[in-house]
Image (cartoon, rainbow, N blue to C red; front, side, top):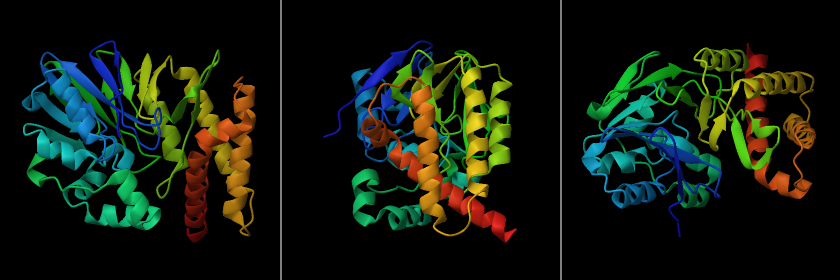
Length: 316
């Protein structure tokens, strides 16, 4: 049974746990502006009933939701877009142009994800994807601005994790809604040094040079905070950005030093060791077993993403 869990931040921002796999792993954000609302990221199809329940709980009419903005089309960020668009009659979907076709006709996206996860796991986590009418889809351009009853949301093209990735800059909060491009943060591993972040190089579009550029592009806004889909509010992000740059360079150095034999297994082992050592230096007092439970699925994605990136380098 999914339980509605949300937290109110300042600046009319609500963080909603999407209940993807476990609590505290993924979320979406509801923004308020003088009676109009925008939703940034949607969670999966199984998240949609919780979002609708929150709207009802807060007496928000369905017609008040103006924009639904997935940061990219990975299913923990956009899997519930079709269900929400079907229930929110005035909403427009704002999406990166490289991801728009997958929202209009999600058959290929669903088939690919089912092949990766298996039918049973796909159904458990994602249910099904619903098509969105093309007439209700807005393809973003870099620098495009959306007017949410006077609250201006600027859309920033931020590839690196995926080519179809955008970030939302909210001048009112001086905050960035960064999807996956500013890494994954783990609330359980917060220390006096702050949140532990990990850039996750999920298949199939990891691109280190442009990811570095995207991080620097976001810092050019001089943000005071970032809102992570994985997970929650991060204040004063400049220092964490330096660590993300170091992590991406470390990934590349680890990957390029490996031979082709048993490469995925070696990537898995070495990326895991790299983060376990960094987490220890970060001052986290959790057991190794507890840490691995939290990060292992992300380590697997990193190894997969790096393996596919290496294969592309070899073909060039």
